[in-house]
Length: 429
Image (cartoon, rainbow, N blue to C red; front, side):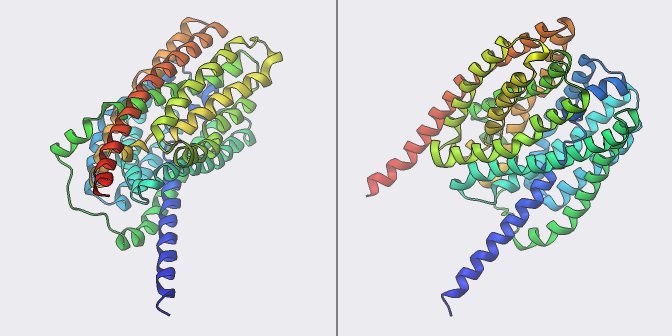
């Protein structure tokens, strides 16, 4: 009888772990829908709100500037307060802002709304969510957990975005449909926030977060002393920002209709997370035995894909090849995005200050959002037609090369730490 009890306990702990994981995936899959309307509704944003490429880029940049300024604050809050409070509060706040956004306020008001969306999502929710994911598994599970987070978010993202696109098309693919799609995102955020507040309560009370250390200036400085870790995430994200422009590229250069491009945008930005996140996680844990080495290879693989994209004729006859090549590029990015937080364990960041560390990682890693969309959008406005998009794609290839070089530095840091850990073990034996 005594031998059976531990098995039951283990099963109970596993169920609790995966229930918490599923709830966190729900939060991660809904929190950014409103600030990333451009993923499925880039062209409707231009038409219904009267926005240029540069103005959309400005909204995204303002959102990212505020997020970047508050990431460390969010990490500090994640080390101090319960996820049961932070995550639902951020979701409900985003939902309230979304209901206002559906009234189509003027551009200056939109700047304020996108700034406040960053406060709710990037300060209150994201660092707390990343810390919660890291605490769910040991060092050998980090790649899989973060990969499954990205894949799970892809499932939620895809289902939610296709539902919003269905509403948009059902109501005529016009201004009314776009307004209803925004309201749908907003109501869903509020509903998920309330659900998480109710269901996370028992989980957090049964498995409280250790409080051996509270984040202070010493912990912030300790977490900041590994620039390779932060710059790898920076390079992944600056290239990821370029995926946004595959949507207008296929619309204006290859002539895809708005509804079809909307479906492509959902697959490109969300659906590929379903494949990319888990694939990246398995490759990191089972094949490469480290996230940094895989990320280096991923950057190198992007360069020939861009070369093929540039060689394709810019005419409607190449619609399908263009869609396939851009989706391949996006898939590689999502395998990298799914694991670009996993090196946190490789370089020895302590778990009790991981909220602060994730805040710093987000501060640097998501910083490209402050300028990349404005830069890419300005290039497109200054170079109409296929030429502007080709310039953007060349920039992405150059950034991928830089990313591979930065990743090599992180590989060396991880190898040095691994050797330092193994030496005492070998000398003991």
